[in-house]
Image 1 (cartoon, rainbow over the protein chains, first blue to last red):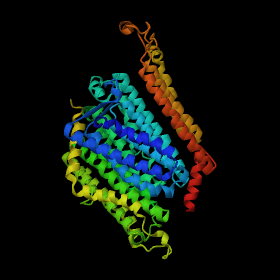
Image 2: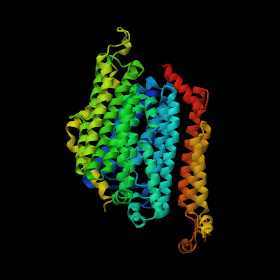
Image 3: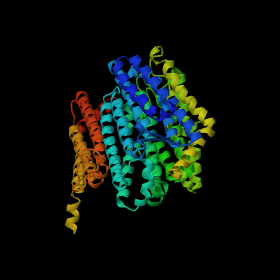
Image 4: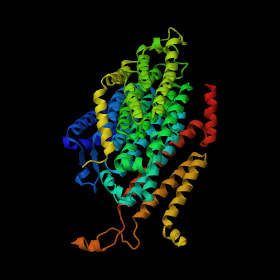
Length: 495
Length: 133
């Protein structure tokens, strides 16, 4: 049984999805979704344990030996990303039960869970597969279900946001297919490990460089790197709360993983940094993303959209770590994948609680909520502090490694920018805190509607908040895994 | 020499032309249906890129020629086109159809919600409702 864990990782949510659609009962579908998510987490954790102790796991689908057949290849990097996605799914799925009943039309709820599970299946699939065309297929599975999930938002602008995401996402995916096709022309292989061996012989060819360019643009569209982020703010702002919490902490992370996997494992660090100067291309983009998007976030009045812009800035931090072209920088990137998933998950889930009670996340509507919804707003404050990078939270750990990486390269101005933009994050988090705690409640005092959110929403939110604090204080374990993963990426495919 | 270069690689020129046409429609047209059409042309260009690169001049379809018995040696002699890109594109076509159907479904719901599928009108309505909030 445990031999088949890699394929079960993908098959469990894939089979649970049609089950949800056939059940036609909201509660039953929700239970299936929760169980499937928890199973995925159990499998991911066991895979990570196996990989940490025994090294790379290779699984041949249908027993067709790679490189002819499709290979699922799990090393520390994949296992790490699988754990991130499955952790967030396991926290968000129970949260969905109450949140979705409130925000999605009743007859659509089973289909909602089916789309959610397909999205989960796609994201896990991208992370686990060792075949480049398979990446594209899973990418489209996750993207198409994401468009449907976003379109289920309560306001009609969710539809236009989903449509815009569909157009830009499909263009990005098509660019990736072009890149994969050009790689196939040059090497005749689609297996990642095989490609990594074959590619160095054809480094000089223009086709490979063009493939690199197409793949780069495609990934940057998918991971919303400035200036290709335009689809993201509206998609996050108008999607149902639980979808925003799930997507914001998983979809862009998996896209970052794709970028790392293609550019460092397949093309190899010497090609990316030596021939293509990837670091020098990404560094300015990352810095502009961090500074400009943090500034834009300060002026938002819709708190969901504020956090969406903050997400684009945070993606900048991840790419910044990559642009250091060092193990420390990559450790920061990989740590921030996990840490940002925890903090944004917690923040968007806290906002979902607010939506459940008062139906709006406009900053004025949140006035005085600190007293009305103490646990919800406390969760928001902890998540916000983590976003700023205050010690004892996970945000601090990421920033620490980022600054370490910058100083290691001798780029102290970059380190200063990282510190200064943390102040910008403090400003936009403070605006919400100020409204919630220092402004009077504007509604009717006797109004029961604006009480604390139900525990079925609060409990999953606080699980993630707790994770923010726990992994902020005990960062040794996560940092160890991230560092080993970074070493794997920098050294390329081992024997 | 130069003409030869153009003619011998004509499949790539067709692909590039189609790709740019599709991309241009996608960017320049405000009508959501036309955007989807542009996206389709764009994706089809990529399908043709894959399929044309699997073709060998004079190659046969990849089918065993002598009835399948002891075909190993005979098959070595036969020059056949690479079937793998075709199979990949079969998958990509399915993905393209799924994308189109989701896009069209969204366009229908946008028409129901806004009463139009012209992007500039939708933007105007959105700006008005935002100002009204």
